[in-house]
Image (cartoon, one colour):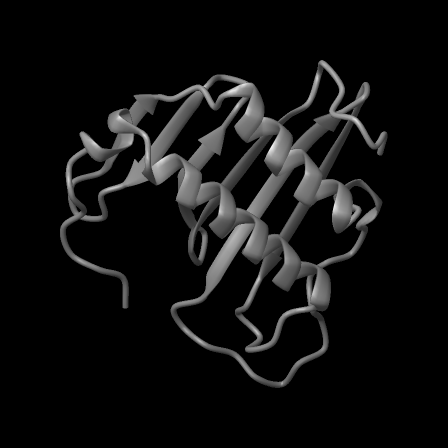
Length: 143
């Protein structure tokens, strides 16, 4: 990854419980999708500022996200329901990279933990946006 954010930098992260990854932050489309659980999903047009994108890129650079390969934990005898799952797609300097992880097997790799912290950082930025605050509240829950 170049140290400075390239012009083509974009990312998309889908996250949620199990294979119900209905939440999405997508800078390719400048959109956010919120899982409303019992009420489906709601979409808002949200474009992050250049400064916000730079701060996200800096964190991705620090954890070398484009160098991450196998971030999913395998070989555990433990299993839990519900479990968190995330899938990522990132474009940096002409290269597109995809990653996926879950905590279904109770533990996560260090790389998956770094991705979770990164996603929470991005989510905090998104949740400050007026368009996000105007989305309906979720109803219900996952078991």
